[in-house]
Structure formats: C-alpha cells, structure tokens
Image: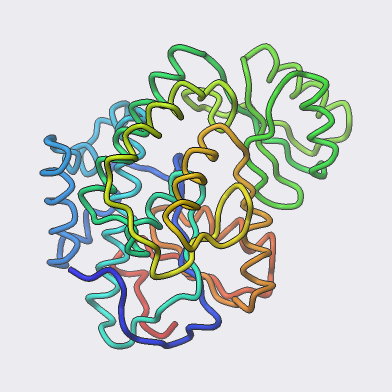
Length: 315
C-alpha cells in the first residue's frame, strides 16, 4: 500500500493535520470498516501489536481506551484509517498536501502519511511511546491545566513563578501548562487572579510535554535507533520548532524533544499559512484541531474527516 498519492491537486495550498491524545471515544472509526483499506489498517495494527486494539477502540470499555497505552495507538490508527478511506473513496481526486503536521501524538501519524515509517513500525513506536509515557506518569505524578484568555508571555511568567511548564501553545489565547499537582493548582489560581477568562484543570494521566516525561524520552530514543526511518516525501511541520522536517536526523531529534518540550501548535499553523496554505484537512476523531485552526485563522478552509459521512472529495 503506498502512502502518498501521485495527484498534485492543490499542492501549494493544502495541509493534512492529525490530532493528539484526548481525541478519543469508544466507537470511533467503526463505520470506516466498510472500506477495505481501513479494515486492513485496523487488522494490521492488531497484528503488529499482538493484541486486539480494535476491540478496545470499537467496544471499550471507556476506562481501557482512556489509558495512555491504548489511547495513543488508537487515535493514530483511526486517523490513518480515515486517511486511507478518503484515498479509497476519492481516488484520483485525492490531493497531495504541501505539508503534514500533527499535534503531539499526531506528529507520529505524520510519519506514516509522509512515508517515513510503514504502518507496523509506526504502530509499534506509538504503542511504546504510550506505554513509556504512562510509566513516566506513574513514576512522576503530575497534571495539566488549560489557561484561556491570557497571552503567551503572561502564561510563561506564571509558569516561571509556580515551577510549572508551558506544554501546549494551541492558539493566541489558549495555552496548556503542566507540572506536579500542587504547582499546577497554584498556577491556576494565579492565572485566574491575573485575568484569565478560564483556568481549567484537565483530566489527564500526567504532566505531558514537561521534564516529568524524561524517563520516557531516553527509552524511546534507544528504540528508534532500530527502526528503518526514511526521509519524508512530504515535509512535516515540527511541534517544537514550527519549521519543516525534511530528513531522518531532524525527525528523530524532534520526536524525542517533543516528549519533554512544548508543542507550539499556534506557530506551526501560522507557519503553514504564511507559506501559502489556505486549506487544512484534519484526519481523526473529534475535529479538535479544526476548531483550534479556526481560532488561529478564521479565513482558512477546514475540513474534518472522522466518519464516512464527513468525506467529501471536493477539497
């Protein structure tokens, strides 16, 4: 199965994007089984992982799907199944994007779509990432909170004063911090006192994209050395630098860095827009990235593909 279509439709104006953890729900992707290519994706991932991840995706229970170990490969699998179903349905009308990008975990989905890793290697890498991050959460307990209505500089100042980390910059006015629970609670109080519209503790397993994830980063780096990475056929816009990754060495460095460092989705989207992208297609459940992109650029066209009904080849 080839990953990249040969069509050049909208090459200069379109990007494919892929969601991260939190974009999961029991039953997601089940209707995609009507497409042979999507059914093959679920079967191949199950075989690669040696367990019936598809059963957890389709039937739950919810507590199992929410575990980082399951959630990360589940979200990746559904995103790829959406992508392959859309290719099957649209055939020669399926466009080639100028860039691909993913939010945190979604960056790993980009590896498959850009031809860096095959499906089985991607699934195993993401499954291990989820396992290692879950173990890091248990070893270094922490949490996260979304700060809404304060600018980035203000949130960085709150982070410095409370010993927390800036983990996600999603839009100009939505930033996520992380750290140990008492530090995050202090940061929430401080953000509220400084005029945040909302400061919301998140229901997450731990402090993702912070130094508390360091145990995961080192083990993942060792595992990646044994994988057959290839240079991407489509540039991947990096979470940490908001610049295109075009070589194996750059990709490996980025994947390790983003485990413990900030996902700057805001700058990534702005880079793509400033490079001529005016349309984004999100593959994966929930439409979370589409909503973020709309807040970043109300003029951008956004299509979210997560069901057979949402697939429209006129993009």
